[in-house]
Length: 253
Image 1 (cartoon, rainbow, N blue to C red):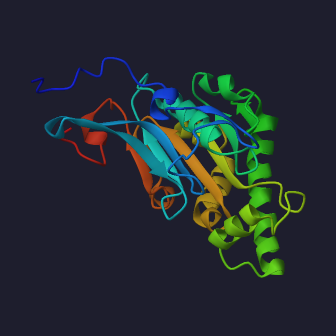
Image 2 (image 1 turned 180 degrees about the horizontal axis):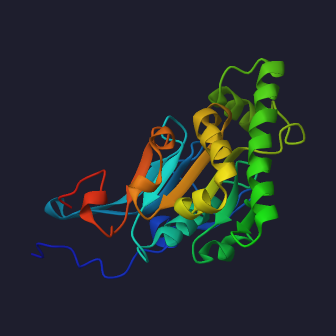
């Protein structure tokens, strides 16, 4: 009898996390019967439970209070890879009408590889200041217009909006965006290079969830993120850290 499962030498691919991928009419390549269907749930990896001799899929749910995410990890720890996994995972489980992504790449250019997905509205490099500002302004504008739409249409919550949109009560023409994610890969560099945009990103974190607007940031150290923003980033993941004292989850790990 084998006591331990084989070592996790290689990270699982998304088709291993989502077995049975196949084309579905109106949804593209996806997993039929995906257990997170209808919710903002995405597979990101594997949870190893050696004492139970099992491994479960790691999911993250963005539909509630944990709709904003902070990913912390030292240099070359896989932050950009995790972001690509998250976006690709959403692309395999949700349609471009359900989720859209706008990215600011202040890392090593790793996000450019997913720019061709229909779910991605655009990826701006730190070397393109005008596009960076335009991307933040676009997401901020979506939030402002949706706030006004909720008021005029008498919609009481984002959950109601999602249900109405799924039923077809709200046309894609009236509201072309579903849940919108602003992803900033390299928050420390973003703050340094574009200090004037930090307040807009923080405002998105403070008000966005009520209107289906999400913020995801990566940081090399947790202290790069001010407390006023960190309080809103309830969905947190830590990768390998340069200093264990940077951990906010468990320094013993």
